[in-house]
Image 1 (cartoon, rainbow, N blue to C red):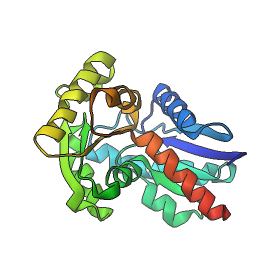
Image 2 (image 1 turned 90 degrees about the vertical axis):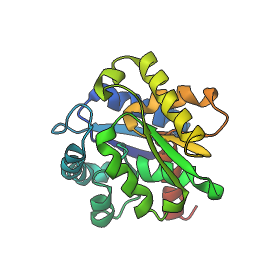
Image 3 (image 1 turned 120 degrees about the vertical axis):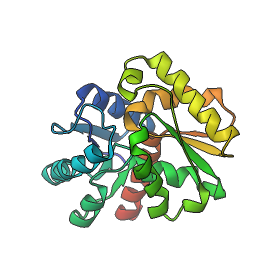
Length: 222
């Protein structure tokens, strides 16, 4: 994959979050694959509602169209994958979302999986993803961390603790055999939670990186 470049689009209008997600993506990609970020400007700093997620789709598509010539693949780095369908339809370029990528990884080998996240207003959007991917029979549901999503993001220790409670509920009450930490801005928390549990904790950004690398390689005939 030497010389390849991935464009990671953050649908949330927060440059610091973009930098964090790009760092995670670069770590997952390894040497030889460049990852550059692009940040939305019209969305909230953190998308927490279905309306904001839907509204973000247009700008994500605009960013992808404007910058597609400088990359070999695109990652949409918000869990609801806003704009991804339009990108796939419009551009002849490998593109993945962190939501679809995480769910495909979580369901490997027939595993039942749940989602732990912070945004209850996005529950219907999250529930729609496994349905669209043909993974409904593997999906055990979503559990939400206690607390206001924005306030949790300002307190990493509290965020980690609240998400751990949601993960535990996915496992103990829903029978999840893998749990996705559902959100791009939750990338650092996802990495920190894995050692706390025996079941796989799926971090969506590395899932998306692995998937886009496979798609680029397949396109190149490697």
